[in-house]
View (spheres, rainbow, N blue to C red):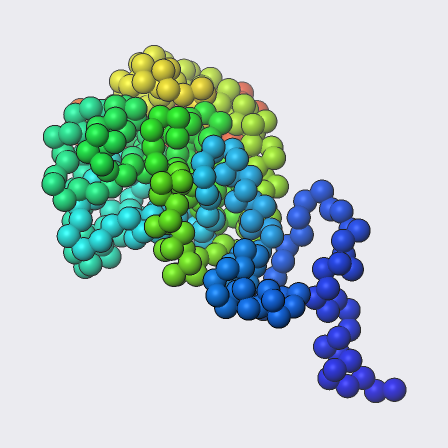
Length: 391
């Protein structure tokens, strides 16, 4: 008998999840759906009234996304977590949720570069002004607050120049002035820094980095307190914010090994950072866990560990050709943006954005220390450093 359209549509899985109930996978499966079926008219009617607490459409996400968001929320110690297609989208969604025309945004000047682009290219067009404060700010944040200031965006440490803010001091001022504080906590992850315990209202992560850990995911999260939930949730619903389900699956899988991976990243990065401090041609190593770091005391007080990305500054006098010889001479370091993955990476550029003026316009080398053998990485760096002065 020839199958007709009805037979084809009813074949295989027809939306009855009960048929799969006995399949207990250790990880949630990936759900790909636009239409989500209701069990009955009562559920449809509840959805029409905005009173249904289940999934109503693909833009709600899926059980895969919900499982990841729940895991992140528990790890963060927050009230509600939402996943986004990238870390930048997590940041910009937070800004859109809590800023209106006429408001003023305060951002640390070591922030992720595209945040500046969003502030100038989008927020400014909608009447939101932005100014930048020194990345080693604490209670002196008060001097940068205006009557129209509504939100303070922190990044501690910054992912290029690695200054730290005194977060508890900033949040104490913010609470007194009725301001919202958000932090990009990607460097430390929830394992090494606990934003909500320091008075922060919103914790943001580029899940692309350590949480996924394998350089094959683009994803971000924002976790909010109960007091920030309503405005944030309304924004997510209004814009139908959801994340790629494959990315949520991979991020949830990566999350399970986060602690093990971070231990190795931390140990290897610290060994190499300490070794680099004694190398010819290196003016300074910018790693918060080193006693030489200007805000090391804050790191020691507020953090329980350090991750695998740091920078070092070259002595004056090196030309771009020398920097190119160094970068191109590395064998185990890939040349590429991002960080937090298993492979070591290198980027290089002029030191320009930080308030650490003694290094302004000097060459800054940023290293993502991966999971390779640390002695192999040290030997690789030693060879490349030798090429700085030898064409």
